[in-house]
Length: 146
Ligand code: THU
Image (tube, rainbow, N blue to C red; front, side):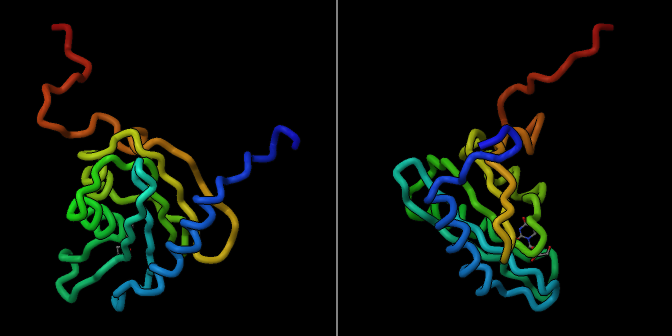
């Protein structure tokens, strides 16, 4: 393997991409036609799935990531290791989803895939998607000196 060849993806990630594609086909997205599917894997190896669910009142729409994360929480899982998101354009999670996921698993790894090719972005740390994230802890941000 030469230096420009990225390391092979673990089998579970390749399988999760396949599964996320199946879930994406179930998306309710009559307004955008943009199918997103997601698999969230926790530290015990449990999988939780989500697709985007749009609404005629557009802002009510749920992204695939928040659907998967909410299913996990409802089933007692919060220790999340990886999230695999597939979409037509290998889209990056929106700001709302970054905040929503960060609450539970700031160090989880993110993989971005698409609906047809083997091109995958990641692993990337969720923390790097949301610098200076909002929490209720005292904010440790650079201070003014004067
Ligand atoms: N969407 C997701 O489900 N996840 C993302 O990471 C980005 C966007 C959905 C929301 C909406 O239904 C459609 O994709 C177009 O924005």
